[in-house]
Length: 574
Image (cartoon, rainbow, N blue to C red):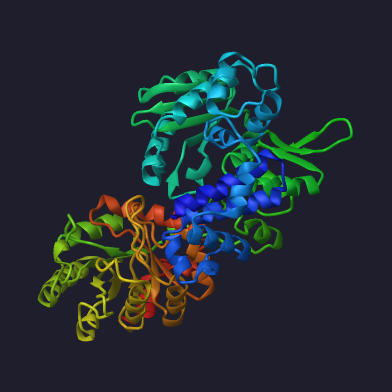
């Protein structure tokens, strides 16, 4: 079984438990496990084969045992038993937009509906209208959700979702009654891939906002239109949802529609313990006769009300941020402005499209103080890798440009191929002449875990290798990472001082955020690099920053936040 299949089973268990109104802590445990498995850059089967399930952050012994059972037998006894406790059609209904476990429980218990087809007929016969919250608009949403369910729906890469959201937000900002506007949901949390794009708006006139939104030129279909929420499909079939609230509720609504479900539940539970009601409408102090609204216009109102500091959106996944907030140990997350340079870019000396001078000047325009030109090494012929003589010639060009620039430095580097036996493309004598050496694997992906782990560790133990590029080799949506012992790699990074790259190229985003906290605890340092092959790709740095923030990194964890003198001292080239 693959990662997606196992995650879906855990999601299903959580859904069934929620339909049956069972223990919320048990439900949360399964949802967290499912999310963790979905985010893994490696095959869960490979991790199991090597006895490393317990090394996955957030996976306890109980869940690990269930994963093992699924991989070994392709079945889970608990899942088979719990599925028998409810009709199978109820789970399919949960895939309908606007239909959650509580709705499914209601229509099952009150109308004995057990299938999507039965639900569709009941909606058309207006049998749901008699229940609270099940009016005409809800029926329309369910019918359209059933239609959408029967169509293929893919998640959106973050870079594509961001472009869509920014474009729509720029248009909606022009509406005179819009007082505040922000992205929300998983895009604001900077997840690698996004489902529907969520946008939150504060306005005095929601009708005007909805009319503008649903008539934007890129809208292909209006899925739903209401006073507070509307959904559309735009060019390319992507779904965009907007919600409009009053300005005095914008902060609490933004929190509510940003955090993961697990995070939001924890916040509400803390509110209850403090005699508060926290929801998208505000923060309310409970009274005997009437609740008193004590906050809501700002997000910080939520956190302040329960005695903790503001938690950045990227951390709101229930991965320990609540505990850190309560104990006063939240990290001061890295920001894009903390970066002083990019330590892995390519030029037209290998497979880049721009000259060294063009890349350097583009870096200066972005406020950088240095850039490392790391063209491919000789064995990667498909990428026009450089040999020893070409490195010497390229160095002459770099020296000439460095004599030209003030307050900016071009570092001479290489993306060095790590061979299957762990040998490197260049001798130490050649590597010693370079400012930055970025070790990488581009071939031999099918080797077993021991081989790949050994080759990377051997490279890290070389004094001249400064950074390991895209450590797992994954390509999102295209290729799983190669088999490696990640805990061993993380430990070696800490032991040798070799930085692990957070490759900001949107198809990679590797190393994944799920491993960063563990790596940091083992003493590892990181480099947020774009792997840019053109000027425009230098802007990918923001995606790497998003990964780093999701992994709780601070600027002192990232070597290219150092000034040039400190960096060169760190690299041993000063």
